[in-house]
Length: 266
Image 1 (cartoon, rainbow, N blue to C red):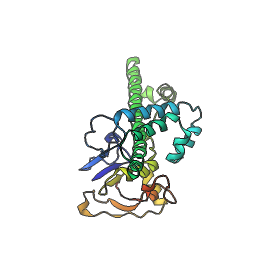
Image 2: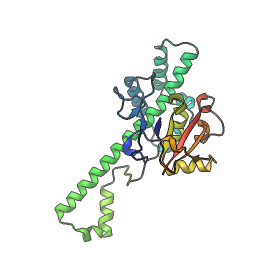
Image 3: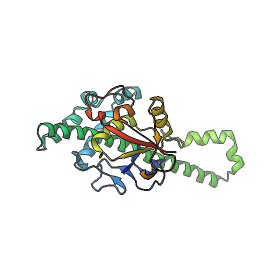
Image 4: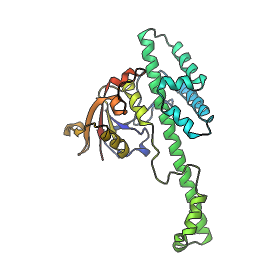
């Protein structure tokens, strides 16, 4: 199975129309996403998932300084739950209590819930990125329509003062200007081994992520022509913690010792 990484929405992926490519579906919606892969037995149902995301959004709204929020983004899942809103952890614990699993089975359910939670957060982040891009395009289209109504031609628009004014008025508070918003891909890499089958191959075409793996001395070799990957694709199989940029596996996430296979293209 070829699975897009890190993006879970086709509109954001650089992988193009690769035949058979699927997109991770963390279970936010009642119906599985078309063309997506939703793991079986996800412990958090869509209703619980939505409640957790709402709690996280409320938690984030407490921070006026982005640097404070970035501090939580660098934490491990255990540290994050300890420092964040109590309702997030209580909902997870309540969800575990509702399951009949005991012992090792219950621990496995908790690991899956935490991994799913990370992917849900990334999914929500992508949804907001798509929403912001749509808002930005709408604002720019409105200004172009106003220019037309005012009779401004290309020569007028080339005037530097007019360009500065247009950029200032079209600012939406988070204008991307065509730039991709980075996902917390390291956290996603740590979560995915818990949720993916052994035959999954993550397909990445993000230059910044590929560069990070090169800096970590991860060697990618030419892919098997029978793999279904495009010509020029290269593949590496390593423990997840190495792809995440860690020096060693996480004790709180033992599945990061599992190997992942990643293909880089483009």
